[in-house]
Length: 287
Image (cartoon, rainbow, N blue to C red; front, top):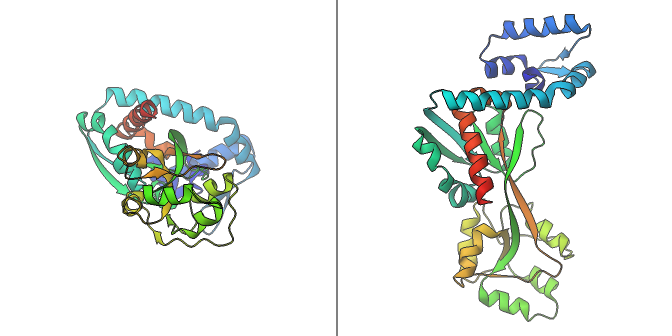
C-alpha cells in the first residue's frame, strides 16, 4: 500500500524504514502470489497497474483503519516525547490551533509550528518535512489522508463606515465591486465562492491588497479601508468590539472547512499518532 500511495519504491522504503531491495522483494512476492504485475517501472517512480488499483480499493480503507487503531494503542503505551512538526495557514495556526496544543505540550511533546498555503502544506507532508498539516483545501492527493477538524461560517466584512455606505447603496453589487478588495490570494479564495452564492457577477476583480495571513487584512479593514471575506472566527471579536461589521449578504453566507492531513505511514510513530488523535478531539470539541 505504501508503494501505491507514494508511487515510488524508494519513497515507500523511507516511509517504512526499510531498505529499497526489501520493498522490491515484497512487491515481487506479491506479484507472484497474485499472478499479475502490480506496478510498471518508470524513469521516475512506478505506475500502478489495474490489478494494483483493484487491490488498493479492496484493502485500502481497512488497512488505514487498522493502522490508525494500532497507532493509537502504541501512543497510549509508549514514550511520545520528541518534536512534532505541524504546518498550516498562519491565521488558523495562531488564532485557532495554538490554544489547543496544551495537552500535547503537557505530555512532553515539543511543537514546531510552520506556515504555508494549501499546496505548500500538502507538499511538506508528502515530502516528510512536517508530520501533520492543516489546510482549507480539499484533500485530493491519494497519498494523504485527512479529516475535517473545524467548519466555520464565512462572512464579508468591512469597517462600520464602509459597511454603512454599502448598506445604504441602491446597487449593492456594483458598489461593493467598486470598493477596494483585500484578498488572501489572486485566485480570490473564499471571496469567489461568497460572490457566486450571492449572484454578484464580475469580469475581473483585482485586489488592492493580497496577503496570506488574514489577520493583516483584518487590521487594514479596521482602519476603514476596503472589504474582504473571511471565516467568522477571525473577525468575530472585532465585530463585537465595533471595529468591523458584517456586510448583509443578498442570498447568504458560505462556509469553510479545515482539514487535518497526514501520511498514513506517519501514524506508526506514537508521537504523531497521539498528536493527530488529540487535535481531532480538541478541535472537534471547539468547532
